[in-house]
Image (cartoon, rainbow, N blue to C red; front, side, top):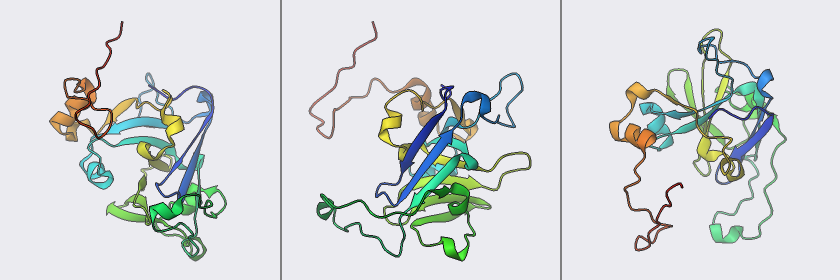
Length: 221
């Protein structure tokens, strides 16, 4: 379903906390429209998508990546300086450890650029150009794939496609960020397309790692 009509802010980041982002989404009437959508069926941006692209599947290591596709000027980022990290290397040593000092919130355009200025490189956000003029952004400490950017065609705003799995759980627990469309369907893998459209309810369902315990789903009344 599309994003809610009211203004909202979506936060997230990498697994270790070195990269944090925020998307300030305006009310529906103030959102730009996707330039490739037909006039009779407009698509406000940001929008939410499931992605069947081969390159994105490999880059995210997810069989079905999901994205929050936002104009980059709606986004800001706060980064831990690479020159002075304080996060303990061992997970057990992080118990009770104070939160790391991080940089101020800055426009995402200042950080998600493949050619940063010399005074804007002291952070753990790195990129890999996976194909010409398309970049994958990740935390170089914990490895979380955070976002995707590309050189956009004329008439299209610069975008920051954010991995939906890196969004804070508090935003995902509701229905505000349910993907609203499939992209790159023609490149999809058959069983993944079936999974995305039909589900696999016949598979055994376990509550956690204990495969001896099963969950019985209740059918809607």
